[in-house]
Length: 260
Ligand code: 13P
Image 1: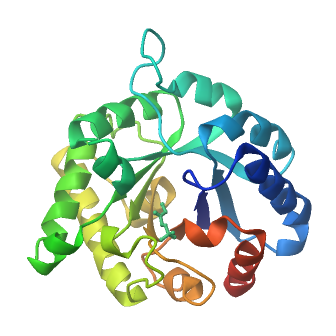
Image 2: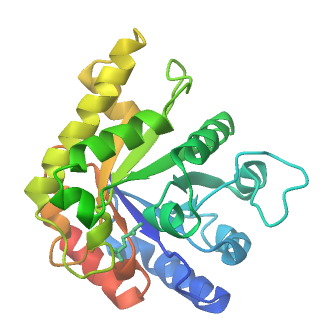
C-alpha cells in the first residue's frame, strides 16, 4: 500500500502562485521519485479549474478543502460536490479544525457533507483532533472518538469504498513543532479501534487487509522534512497531511527528499 501525501494549500497562495507551484511540481514529478507515494493537492477553489488541467496527465490527484452537503440549488457562496467531481476531484477534506473554529462547523454539518461526498464517489479526508485545553484536561481520546463517531453517524459503511481520517492536534498546526511520531501512532491506533468498533456494531466484517484497503489514517500538524519520515515509518500512520511545508517548491522538495 502506498503512503499518502496530501498538500493542503489552505488560503495561502494566489491563483497565479498556486498554478505556478502546481506546474513546478507537475514538471518535476518524475524526478521526485514519488512512485511509492500517493500525492494529492488541495488548492483553493479559485485555482482548482486551472490546476485540474495542469495535473490532468500526471499521477497527482486533485483534492478539495471542503464541499457543501447539497448538490445543487440556491446556496449562495457554497461549493457543490457534484461540480467538484466534474473537475476531477478525488479527495475532499472535511471537518478541518480551521473550519470547525472559524466557520463554526459542527459534527452535524460534517456528517451531512460526509454523506454527499461519499455519494458522489469522492474520498473524504475527515480531520479530527483536540485543542490544547482538551489535551490538558485529558480529553484528547474522547474528543477524537466522538468526532469520528459523529462524522460517520448513519453513513452506509456496508458500501464504503474508501475513507481517509487525518489526526491533526489543533494546537500543533502551524506551530513548527510537531508532536512525537509515537504519540501520533498511539492516537491513530485509537482511531482505528474506534472504526473497528463502529463496523462491528453494524455487523460488518472487516479483516486487517480489508481495513487497510478501505481506510487510511494520516497525521497532520507541522510535518516537515525533519520529521516526515518518523511519521511515515510508524505502523499505523498511512500518510501525512501537510500545510506550511507544502506551499513552497523548495520545502516541498526537501519533504519528498526526506521521504525517499
Ligand atoms: P501545518 O503543516 O502548516 O501545521 O498544517 C497542517 C494542516 O492543518 C494540514 O491540514
